[in-house]
Length: 418
Image 1 (cartoon, one colour):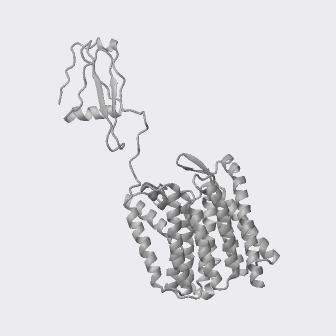
Image 2 (cartoon, helix red, strand yellow):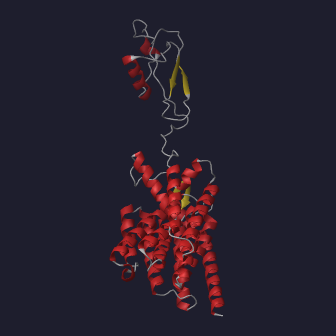
Image 3 (tube, one colour):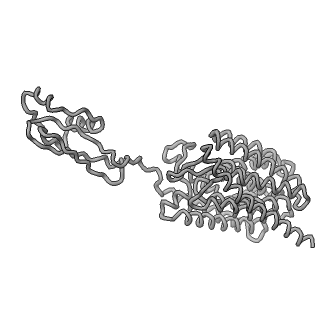
């Protein structure tokens, strides 16, 4: 009877979380657009207040269940939820006022330091756990740059970490992650491509912190090597995305804080996948890694299984590094380069032909301009100083000579053909 009661209570709680998040995310879209809290994806504004719906619904439903005695959280899960809510508030401030990344990382590390059980992990392992929680929480934020990716990976990871907590008889974290998974599923109704609302830093940091913090609690008491392998398997996709972005920007000489279309989903789109296909591929990869992590946590497979996950993630990162994402800037269509034509004898006609540099766009286009009457043909190529002058003139056009100015020329100018 208690088992059936617990299943019924968890089902009701998850259903309420799903429905409330779906409704609240739809209601928050208009205020986000009005307040300009948006992100641009493929030249369309996407509101960023979807994470507020996930945070509010998860916190309210879990707190209400705990106060009513239906699904008690316990002290550990209560501290985790409070710290995650603070991190979500910090992310909301970043969405509104564009805080720097280092402030988000520092705030997340402070919140993680209040959650990690140092008495069971020890000071060294606890410090490592704090750093791991802070870094992987920031990695979850990178998944929100594409439609549906953060929500899908978050749902899969929440079920995996919740299963690990349930095996350890941690009912509070398990129920909390179930509520989070239901909230993310309701949010995905509006975040599937084309997304009408996104998590933003508020929802992505809250989700990442809650998942990583619960994973650390579930692995407390195990060896550090095996624990690290299981934790990396449970969060393989966000970790691989963060490593891929850092390596690609470092190799390209770009600042690490400068954004760009260089995440996992962006590179899969470059390979020809649709937006929905990229989400399915990343969700499948996350599911495989999470299943391996759960089996390794329960002892069904050996610790070397986590090495297979790490090897697969490394192979994927190295393969996607070859996908070109940092191309040269394209010229605006119709913005041709005008080259000045040297005046010559009257009555002559000329055509000025200028080719754009091949590095400026993929297909060089020829811009042809017909000169006025009384102009001779300009050379297409020039050597030496004449070539440099014509190239500079093509970039910095000058005012053309009018018919009244041509009268002052005593003899027709000769153009030297290369």
